[in-house]
Amino acid sequence: MMTSVGPVNPSQLRYYTHQFRRNRVPGQLVVQMTDRCNAFCPQCGMRTTEHFKRHRLGLGQLKTIVDNAGRRRIQAISFTGGEPLLLLDDLIAMLNHAGAAGIPYIRTGTNGFLFRHPERPDFDERIDRLAARLAATPVRNFWISIDSADPATHEKMRGFEGVIAGIKRALPLFHAHGLYPSANLGINRNLGGEYSLPVLPRHHSEAQAADFRVACERGLGRFFRFAADLGFTIANVCYPMSLPEEDRLGEMQAVYGATSVDRVVSFARHEKALLFEGLARAIRANRSRLRIFAPLCSLHAMKQQLAGGPSGYACRGGIDFFFVDAMQGHSFPCGYRGREDAGAFGPEDSGSDAGPPGCYQCEWECFRDPSELTGPLGELLSRPLSLLRRLRRDPQFFRCWWEDLRYYRACGFFDGRKPSDMGKLAAFVGAGDAARPDHQVRAASPALTTLRLTEARRSAPAGQDRCSRLTG
Image (cartoon, rainbow, N blue to C red):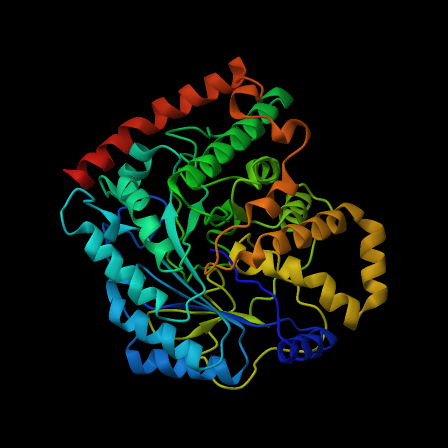
C-alpha cells in the first residue's frame, strides 16, 4: 500500500518543519472500514472462505475518527478493508469528509471485483459511473490489487475470472475522469507466474541464492512491464505480509487480517534480503516505464537489517502513524502490533517527543517506507550529530535516499490525479545489469530449476484443490 507524498504549501512546510524539530514526522492513519471481502486470495486472512464474524465501522464512527484525524493534523489517510468498495456509499462519504477535515493525501483501493465481466453490455456505463463518483471526491490515489503478471494466475488467486481484461478496459475510463489508478502488488511467490519464486532452503549454496535473487528480479520486472502494458501509470509494492517464523507465537499479534501463513506469501529472513535486492534492481530497470513507489533507501535499510548489518530508521508506528481496526474502531501502532490496543482514536496527539522510536519487528511498507523516507529530515533538524554518524556509517543509504527524492520529483510525487511525465521519467532509464530486458537476465541454473519443480510438486495439489473449491 503506497504512502502518499507530495509537494507542500507554505503552511504545510511550517508544520512539517515544526514536527521534524520535535523528532516527529507528518502523521498517517490507515482506517480499516470493514473486514468483509469477496475475494479468495490465499495470501490474506480476510478471504471470503475464512470463517469468522465480519465487522464494519458505522458511518458515525468513521466520521468521528476522521474528524479527530483532522484535529491532530494527520496528513495522509487510507481507507482500506476487507474490500472498501463493498461499502461504496460510505466510502464516497468518507473520502469527501476527509477532504473537508483538511487531510491533504487521501487514498483507497479495491480488489478489482467490479471489473469482472467486461463482455457485458453495461460494463462501460457501470465503470464510468464508478470512476465519475470517485473522481468527484478529493481522493488522491486509488489502487487496484494485482497479484501476478500472469492473468490466469492472478484470476485464480483472486477467484475473479476475466478481471484482467476488465481492468485493461476500465483504466481509460478512469483516465478520462482525471483519475490514474495504481497497480498494487502484494509480493508473493506467484508474482511472475505460477511458482515463479521457489522456496529457498535455509541451508543453500551461493549459486542457489544468486538464482533466487535473479528469479525475484525477473518476476518483478515482468510484473512492472505487465502493469504498464495494462495501462497503469503508477505501481506500488506491498512487502510480504507474513509474520516472521520466530514471532508467530511471540510478541507480535496481527490485528490487520491481511496476513497469512500460506506458503505463497511466507518468506524467511534469508529470502527477504534477496527479495529486496531483486526488487531494487527491478525498480531501476523499469522506473522509466511507470511511476514505481518503493523507496530504494527503504529496501537498502531492510536488506541490511535482515543480513545483520546496521539498522535504518525505526518505524514511526504508534508515534506518528496509526492503524484503526474494523472490529472496534480502536487504534494500534500498526497492523502487526495487535497486543497494543490504544482504544478509540481520539483528538489528542498521543505520540511522544522523547527520543527516537525503536521498532524494527516487521517490514509493513505502509509505515516502514515513510519512516525511512522522512527519517533523515527529522534527524537533521532534531539530532544533526546523529545524522552525521549515520551518514559515516552507511553512506549507501543516503545515496539511495537522494536518488529516491530525485525520482519522486520526476514522478510528480505520485499524484494519482495527473498522468506520468514520460519525458522526466526517461532520465531514469536503468543502467548495467538492472537495465537488461527479461530475456537477457542470466538464465535459470539447474539449481533454480530443481527448486522450482520441487515447489511445484509440493504446492500444486493444494493450490489446485483450493482453486477448484473457489471457482467451482
